[in-house]
Length: 356
Image 1 (cartoon, rainbow, N blue to C red):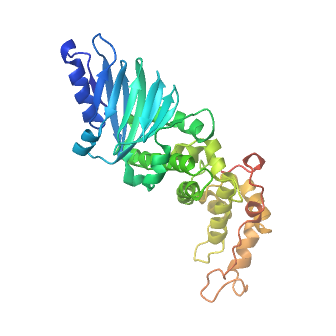
Image 2: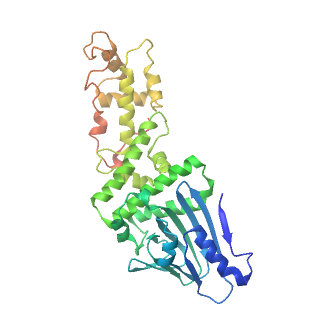
Image 3: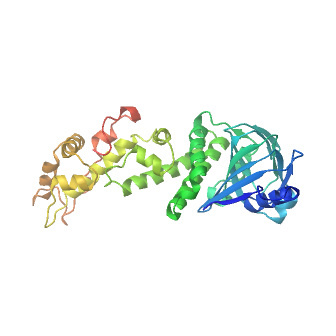
C-alpha cells in the first residue's frame, strides 16, 4: 500500500514546513526552499519492495539541498536513482553540475552533499537502496554522480521503461515478488553504474555475469514449463527481450537454443536411466517441456544422431557396454547436443521454438 503525503489539506502558512518534513521523513533529511511566492503544492507517494524504496514526487518549483550538517545528523548510506518524468532540474554532486531533462536519469549518493534545483513544477521517480547491496566501490559510484544519463539509446533506453512501469505499479506486488524485483533492480543499477564508470571494463563484465548466472539458474529450474521462452525469462527478470539477447552475445548460443539444449540433456539422462518402470518417450519429453513429440524426436536425432527410442535401447539393454558397473551412464556418455553447441549465436538465426 502506498504512503501518500500531500500539502492539499494543509493551511497555506504551514505548507512549506509540512513539505520539508514530508520529504525529509520519506527520503533523507534535506531542506526545501520554494522558488515561487504563492502557496506551495507538493505530493509524494512511496512504496517499498523489499529493501528498495520507490517514491514519486510532484511539486512546485523549489530547490532541494542535502547539506553536510544534515548528513552528519542522519548518515544513511543510500544510493538513489532519479528519473525525471516532467520538468527539468539542475543537479550538483561531487563538483559536477548536470542539466537534467525529461527522461534523463541521475545517480546520487546520500552520504555526500548534493542539490536539485527545479525551476518549474516537476514530477520525478526516486529509487533508493542501501549502498552495500550494490557491491560497488565508492570510486565507481563517484564517477557516475553529478551526471545526467540519457535514455535515448544503450542501457538507459532499456532501463527507463522498466523503472517507469515499476514506479507506477509498485503497490501491487506480493512480498515474495517484491523481494525478487528488488534483487533485479540491484543487478540493473549495478550494471548501469559499472558501465558508466568503466565502459567495456571488467566491472561491467562482472555485473552482466551475475545477471547471466541468475538467468541460467532460472532456466534450469523451469525446464519442465512448456511456456519457458525468451519472452517469459525477460518478464521474470524485468528486462527487455532485446537486452536478454544482448546478454547472451558471446555465450556461443542463443537463449532459445540453450533452453532446448538443457531440455535434451535432461531427456537423454532420463531415457538412459534403468529402472523397474520405464516411462514412455512421450512422457519423458513432456516432463521436460516438449509439447510436440514429433518435434522432440527430430530435435533429439539432430542433436545426438539417433532417435530417442534407439538412445534408450542402446543404454538400457543389459551388457550394452555403455553402462558403468553401477548401472549409471558411463562418463562422457552425454555430450552437449550438437545443434546447440555449433549453432550461430545471433537470436534471429534461431529457427527452433524453445518450447517444442
